Amino acid sequence: MAKVKVATVWLEGCSGCHMSFLDIDEAIIDLAKVIEFARSPITDIKEFVPVDVGIVEGSVGNTEEEEVLKELRAHCKILMAWGDCACFGGICAMRSTFDKEEVLRRGYIETESTYKGKIPCPPGVPALLDQVKPANHVVKVDCYVPGCPPESKAILYALNELLAGRIPVLPSDMMRFD
Ligand code: SF4
Image 1 (cartoon, rainbow, N blue to C red):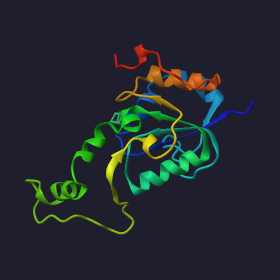
Image 2 (cartoon, helix red, strand yellow; image 1 turned 90 degrees about the vertical axis):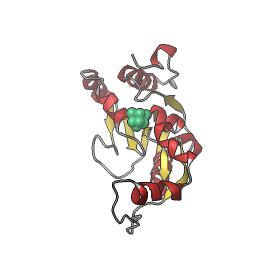
Image 3 (spheres, rainbow, N blue to C red; image 1 turned 60 degrees about the vertical axis):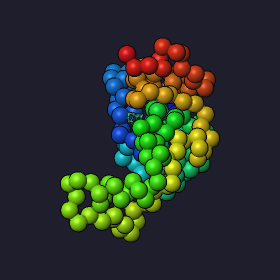
């Protein structure tokens, strides 16, 4: 039987959601028999190919992240959001309470330790969006695994539900970190 193809992207986040996935420990051996990873920080493959399941970690805070998420959506049948950043904006969305120019000025010029600071703008560096957005403000998301990070058992549950042909809805005891 053909393996289920999965792609994952890591946008504006800390990689903690991917780390939590790797915390499923030996369960990854059984999972590897039925799924294969295409583009993902886990494989370091950069190209998108059509996949069954796309997974997004992180919120959307710049133009590159927006493009990557749209590409993922265009290449997957089901899109799952991992973690509070992708589901709700998470801690990254705290920036949205400030004007982005103000944030850049504070970060690169006005911090107490900065000497002769300037806002960098080398070619190729993606521009910040005015607001940091959760994934579903950019594309359609089919299912959610919230948490910061989600517990590995919640991630495993969601993947197994998808493998069984069901859209996962997490039981309430998986919505908090024990
Ligand atoms: S949800 Fe938490 S663990 Fe996941 S990327 Fe965001 S900050 Fe990191």
